[in-house]
Length: 204
Image (cartoon, rainbow, N blue to C red; front, side, top):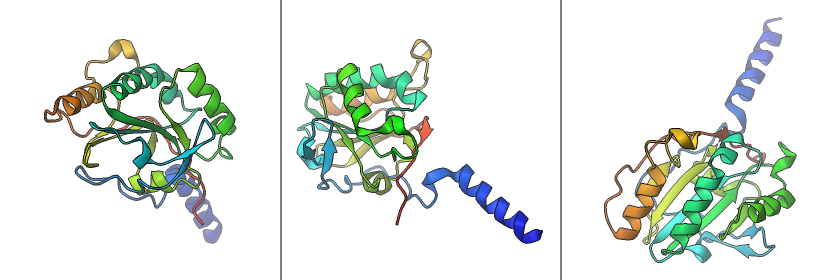
């Protein structure tokens, strides 16, 4: 009986911890972009790396997906910022590290549909095996990592302070992007990413 209860407890613990169990700590501020040369499949069918999209002003990486209600709530804000600041010299990449076996809505086909419908003017890639998410220590969608033009992390966390756009009072990512392109200090360099837990591919 004790053995059965122990098994139940361990199983429940794994469910609560989710697929991020054993995940590396998130990057420290000032860290270099990890796995920048690894190639990932974009929604246009071509392969590219973070190195390929890096901008003269910096690089914005957002871990995203298709199914998460938090991503859907922030989608228009994220896309507007990404499209706008890409034109101002910031390289942009959205990455889907979720295993589609865990949620079929995170399939490549639906990634292509979402990118088209939402007007992505930047790449949206598959992190097959979730190696990039693990290297970044990403745990949520959406989760933002902003790097300067030297590839050093200058902002990590949330897009802003409220899922409901009407309730937003602090525009963390917008302020960080504006400071970055203007060559000014980032006003708030780290916040807590709020969203769905990543459903990473099994680690073998």
